[in-house]
Image 1 (cartoon, chains in turn purple, brown):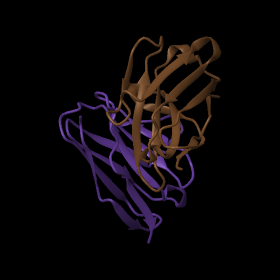
Image 2: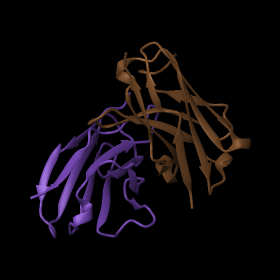
Image 3: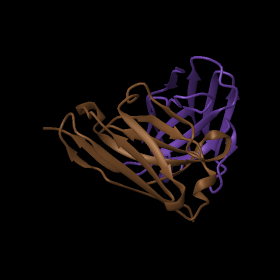
Image 4: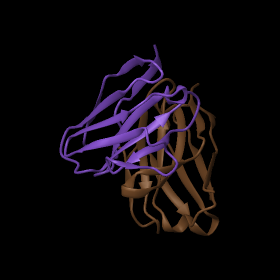
Length: 107
Length: 118
């Protein structure tokens, strides 16, 4: 199975900050990497698919990059609604494993 | 608008069985692969299973293989998860999700809680 890791596991930031979350796969997954946002008590929502494609309706301050084993999610200017937990997930091969999550909190 | 609504969760004793359902609307359900993902209380997301559009191909996480069975009824626009030999560690919110682009999970239901406890 492909293992996914995320760094950091948590971070605190302020509105307007630029933040980056890293995700690493234990083997190459090409660009089959997706990012999800989950707010407390809510279902996850797809933000980025295929490593760098923005899901319809997602604000352009979100961006993704990477290929192979190393990927990043960047939020260019944090807004209050962005404080949530973010998960990466590989869809290269089953089981479609998720990373452990990064909790983004308000400083 | 795509809508996925899970049902069937509840309290069950260890060793018991439960069948979850996921009713889909607003989409051509039969054209898409669909998945189950679970989340234990306070923990992260764990992919559980997926089934292809026609129902002929399935895959499972090792932790549920041999105990859970995914199926679908395209005439009823409904996805199922039959869960047998349930364990305490199966306690979680179970989400169904529909394939999006690049094999992502593009649409999610609101989840249904399964609690395995005596």
